[in-house]
Image 1 (cartoon, helix red, strand yellow):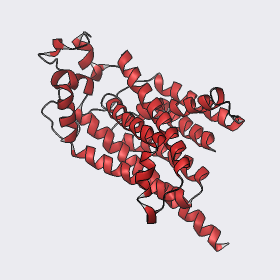
Image 2: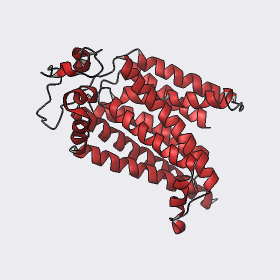
Image 3: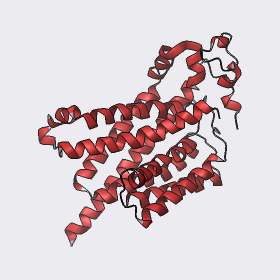
Image 4: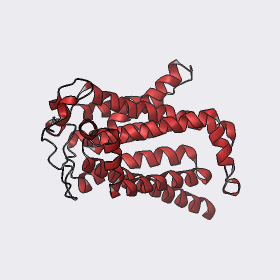
Length: 131
Length: 164
């Protein structure tokens, strides 16, 4: 019984870690790309190399990629001993909700009722699809 | 929203969905990878499904970054979750798999969520929040913008900040 409880606890810790790393990665990447600016306009001004150079000179981009890689590998580890049908959808759902909070706080996006409804519905839908 | 931007959003959804499923199909063929045999990762990449899946996920990453450069995170994520719906529809109508009632309900919820976010603004945040980049005035028309390759009016390329 104690074993069941600890594995349940570890699985949920893993889910939260995966979701947190995903949220950090997404927010950093979104911030990096906002600093880079609309790549369509940038492409016209300075070409593909200009776009790539601008992205590669952004430190948030590298932090974001690192966090996304962390999320990917922690998901792999979680999947290797956790229940796939719980870990993957739960982490995806939590990421959608967490991103709505993080985008409001850190990216100053206007998360109005419309955006909240979208985040909650999609999170629920993803959970049902994978379940 | 221009047609090209809808194409980018569709690219995010399709590349992620198809890339993910090709990757998982390939990984089921190659078998599980353990930390003791990390060399099996190299063998996995040689599997054509895995290789194409990786290329598609790189394409997903490029279009995801493209979308984030002109749209809010809370817009891009729900909008591109239509990829999950696409996967379920492919499973039902192309692969003739059974799609359970719960999954149909999930499809309905995601579609509803996308409908909510699609009716609202694309961009509500300001890009120039922390680092003082010298080109933070994005609405300014570049002097040499009329050599745009596809002949689209230069104004549409730089007006996205004001788009609602």
